[in-house]
Length: 630
Image (cartoon, rainbow, N blue to C red):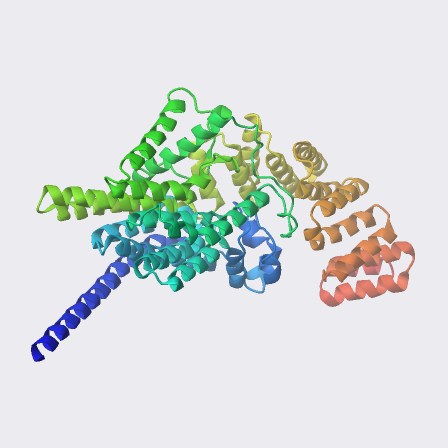
């Protein structure tokens, strides 16, 4: 009996030792991943907001700035329903909107990315039975791949790092379910799945990832229970998938959601591309993302469709054929080589929805779309390469580690430069223009940034270049109008001519996009200085299209009514602005002038005094009050 107990105790001790050693190795490898990733992304802490959705998500998003948490649960933002993402941004936003800075948001994105990298490491360890180097390099490449910079340092892509964290947690807990068959693990995996899909609709593919894990675990795909247990989760996927399509088309999903911005349809019309063209675009993305895994050099924030919106010549055949061959190999090796089939299956499932078969937006590719798919690609490659080296040489593991390290260094060098590209809108769009010098979107966004930062001549150069190339983008004409309007203040001797140019540009923009409220608003600002009566109509149109910006529009609408001599309407409009919470010296000053125009001296004096109580040093109001003898 004593001997048996001793053997039992030795077995327990050995198991504990192995467990402790594994824990120490996990912590050690994780610290290496953390340190390398942190150092590479440290410069991003000085990056700024970029004019590529950041204003929609944070800078000018009233639901975030005002911390309207309840409304965030009901409202799509930027044609996406992702309330958990928006909540995370709102929680970080300071109460004083003037103190909103980019750094805190980027820091949290980086932190979430590091957590995701460690989760990838743990996930691959679990499914490979603790093949440390395969797991390490899969996680390291995920952490430092330059194609992932967009998902990490772009504040608007908080949804990527957040949904991926929950996706990985869901996969890890599902793997525990496959090992233990305990329902609690399946329910926990389902909970993480719901959290993921509430962070980004892309997470609807999680139940399909579970099926790939079933395959890797040698679970029979004909097992009835395997499919039955997933029915509730597949139903959730279908529900949120239908919601995503509805939101992308500019709808409110049958009234379930509340639309707060302008109604926009991001989906291309069904007849925009033929079925063959859609398949060609999808196969192009399928192959290009794989190519950029190995050679991510010419990357950037925007990849336009090919000229003429068609793949021509050899490319029109090469990409579809290559895609079909790779998928065919995966099917052929279904039972012979699970590594390739699992890797290509994971990649296909996680990238399929963004391959532009159902065309969304104006870009054919996007770096951020590789964030999760590269987990499958990296795993399959490192798993396969390690097997090959170890079979051919006793020192095969050293060759594998050395080669993988060289590849990682190559990626890290590119990532270090790509992080700096996202420094601001100037650097971001300048990189895009290096590869696509005539791209209207990049010219428009760089021009707008230049205009806002005082480089008016540079802005005009960008806008005029776009127009010279035949651009028909409303935001280009709007930006040029803004530039002329700003220049009119800098050159008083040319003010009238420059304002006339600005108005002409806004009118051209409205010919292209008549339902764009912001263009009506900017048109009104220019007309306010030349023809107040016309500016009234422009501001009313802006208010009709953008009721969510009423606190910004009502004061200038009141001023335009005042300047047009419509005193009673001006009083009503400005009073409405004050009731909405606009408390500046100017609204009281404008209303005071309107009262004076109506002959109501007591109310005029009261409003002038109220304005001066807000800002006693406003010389314009003091002078006007004196000139009127009040």
